[in-house]
Image (tube, rainbow, N blue to C red):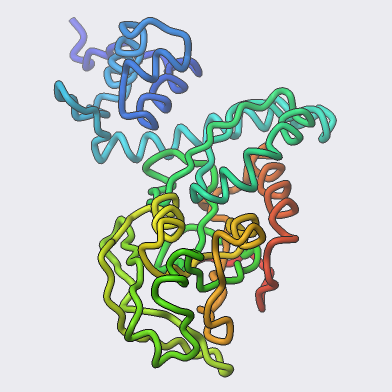
Length: 323
């Protein structure tokens, strides 16, 4: 009898379909939603992930009755799977005409007002030019985790902070200080920074818990200053922020791109135009990859061209890491 160790047959490599199911479950944090989006029974999605876990010999998700969350191994597997599927998609389309060969799903994120006011109204043009693409648009003011939540790219307005992502600067949004006509009629028009002591400011707090310390203004040298102000309302999304201003609840400081109509029809009035905040930088963020999928490149270029007329130029226009 041979003393050679018993060699078990190797598990077959996971199929492309199995990897696609796993990636979709990871992005949606739900077997049910993943199965629905792929047109599969829920049991099929669960079985596919179990088969992948058995093949890899590790648990990919923490499962409870209320949520599905990637394990540490699952996160590493997810990032590799995204690259593998993107590379496969690129290979399948690399010999097709550049203008008509794009297909697949794009998952993108951007602030709510930019999505509603600027992007969605023009999105039919992009999809008509690329009928093989499907866009999943998340319009939210919170700072999404691009890698963990499976976004191909996100549009971010404001300071970037530390990150391992790549940032493509697009420009900056001009800012304005606004109040409703009704508010001005009740409290008067502020003529100087000293007048702000008699006025209220609608506070905006981010999902990170950061709140503006007061009325922000930028001097001629580019330095930012704040005038402390009180207010009766704090909001956490741009829609409520604009609504609060229209309701006469105080002054707001917002990008000009979303309020032109309200200013033209007199519902909103610009105040202290000499003391505007510094323009807010706008970047496209995406993860480091050997080769960015063509569909992502095409969308980012379209978005950059769409927003260009609304943006002030930045000092640098090259792609640089944000870390």
